[in-house]
Image (cartoon, rainbow, N blue to C red):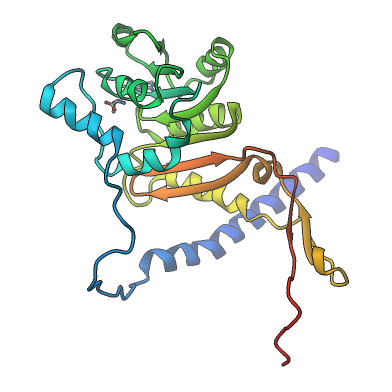
Amino acid sequence: MESGICRGMGLIRATLASLKFRRLSRWIKRGRDTDFAWSVATTGSWIPRSQSNPLREFFDARRDQGGPGICKWRHYFEIYDRHLCRFRGQQAYVLEIGVHSGGSLAMWHDYFGAKAFIYGVDIMPECRAYEAPGIKIFIGDQADRSFWRDFRRRVPCLDIVIDDGGHEPEQQIVSLEELLPFLRPGGIYLCEDIHGTGNKFAAYLHGLADRLNDAAQINDFPDDDTRRLFGRTTAFQSAVGSMHLYPFVAVLERNAIPVAELRAARHGTQWQPF
Ligand SMILES: C[S@@+](CC[C@H](N)C(=O)[O-])C[C@H]1O[C@@H](n2cnc3c(N)ncnc32)[C@H](O)[C@@H]1O
């Protein structure tokens, strides 16, 4: 009897979820299909291009002088520097999934400095060859949750994860689920090479992003101007402060301090009279 009720509830929940998805898919399609009339810039961009970028300079030096190979899209260097520069010179714990020829681990070591701990993960045992002072290599499959359980026991903590591994959605999802909660407060999770429209990992990220807007616990306090809207955050909102999408890259930032509540207020004495 009880299991019949549970099955009935499960069916109702699945039907509601499917209706919600169908309702949302119209809006996803609308976003994808909108033909924006972009204005043509006549006076150039108001965002100054940063003059120097130590990561791009390291990358270009590899082209000019040779050394262990690095393979990166060029626009990634602006993204890295924007989100990661505050960790430079710090005792930061940095993991890159995907070692290949070892050059990018050397680049991170150069960028973050001698106090940082750089970890590399790769499925190819030969990548152990790229271990060096300040750089430790772990061999394993990023889609294997038991590998990450073991990894978490072997490193003290993580501040930064850069996923440049196999690039399959299932690998990217498992790695994110196993490592995002392990990041120290204020940490950064960056996933590279999310390619193609309709990408499954991108769709998963849209699902996560939806959770940032959860307002189920928000209440109105009409009599109190300092607490007009107030609500407790969900565990996800408390931990994750922001998500950023770039061409082929997503960045999630963990809050430095857990956010317990969100509130809106009205400040000022003059309001529209109509
Ligand atoms: C794009 S390359 C990494 C490039 C390197 N980060 C760089 O910037 O030069 C991808 C690497 O991911 C590794 N890889 C592929 N599948 C993997 C998996 N399931 N788990 C861990 N590493 C994987 C490959 O062996 C390869 O070395």
